[in-house]
Amino acid sequence: MVIYPQRLATMFHNSIILQSLLIWGTSLLMGGRPGLVSFGISCLGIILMLIFSICLPVVVAFALPHICPFPVPYVANPWLIIGLFGSPALLGAFIGQHIGFILLKRHLRSVYSRTKPGLAHNKMEYIIDLEAERWIFKSGFVQWLIVLILGTYFKVGSSYIALIWLVSPAFAYGFLEATLSPVRLPKQLKVVTLVLGLATPVVSSVGLVVRMADVIVGSVVRVDRNPGGLPHWLGNVIVSVAIAVVVCFMFVYLLSYVHISGDKKTLGLLLCISFGLSLALVSSGIAPAFTEDVARSVNVVHVVDTTGIDHEPLSYISLFSNTPGKLTKELVDLGDEEFSCGRNMTIDFVTFTMKYGCWSYKDSNTGWSKSEVPVLLVESDSVTGGARQTVISVDTKSSTRWSLRINKQEIEDFTIQVDSKKLVLPGDKTEVDGWHTIQFAGGKNSPRKFQLTLFWSSYGTHASAKGAKEAADLPFLLKLRTDVNRVTPKVAKVLEKLPQWCTPFGKSTSPYTLAFLTALHVNI
Image (cartoon, rainbow, N blue to C red; front, side, top):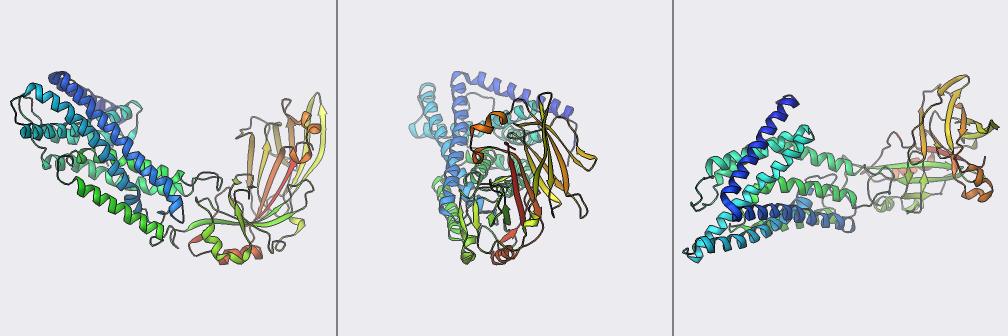
């Protein structure tokens, strides 16, 4: 690892940027208008390369959820993204760059027909191919120069990567290929130029790319904070775009060698075979999406819900996962447990909302008692000097881990105290989507009874809401979830039947295996 100060890096990077701009400016001035047009077309080829390289794998990303049993079928085998997204990205990059190559040849053909009319047709076409190949190669310098300029301007620490990918190939090209003679005919790019130019950048970047792919794949299976809230294709699109960008930037120099070689059809065939083989592996299940070592996280929670108007407990078993995809495969092993799944099975767990999951009411009335249901009791409600203040007693019963949401559209401020000790003092409270969330986790002897004092906002809607709506339509003022670390008989039965590639896993915001839900409406 080489460490140097940002000030030195800025000076060094600015020096390289200035030298690169001077070299390019001098080269374009010597080339005149034809050189300027060739430069513009080669830059257009870079843009086309990015567009095509992103479009093809994105199409695959949208199709995967409809073809494979799981929307993200490469979690257990991340190497499959090479075939699923890397192959289409590389093919798209070559197609886009080849379109620029063809446009560049058309321009060079008109230039050479005017400046060198004595050349034989075959000789001219060969020279044009070589000249276009060189412009495509040099366009990679422009691509990395832009990245280096942006990284230096925004003081990005990893901009040294762009520096390596710019300087090393540029030195190799300048040492082995460049000539200052405007009349000298171009020669074919040497393979040694590619090898010397890419040796250092590839060695310094490949490890980072592999780690980046692992991190992205590991993140897309847990990016959905509200299970079922994000489209199934989103994770695939993120991975495919990241792979496409890496392919474009790392293969820009290599692809310039392919356009005039006889290996274009071979390259396309190999990429298609790689993609087809990877797709067959994931769609058939030969390469499973999850294994015992890389399991799918599934939450099995016994829910006792008293948020209804009559506050009568409604007991059921909920099944959901933060990993994208339906629970169809899991239900095969849970067939006799009578689960119903869908996006209408919404549950507000206070810290998040389950927007897709499964419910089962079968045998859900055992393992808990009504004495464990938390209580939100209004002790007093008064108006002093035009300001409304409400004191609510919160009893979490047997739970020492709970989450509470307070409606900040109605409540301006609040305090929480146990006996005479205040746990939350008055002051500015943050809010997300109009709610302030409190999470509490205590030990075995932590308090279970709290006093919540609410200071109502003068801009709230509670005054007009009292007589304007039915009670069922009124918004909640408080939402409380209490967690109990207990496995009820029905939950134990479900956990036992889950496939081996599933594992119970909960985030810090997830409920335990037994959760009680209760709430208060604004018309208290």
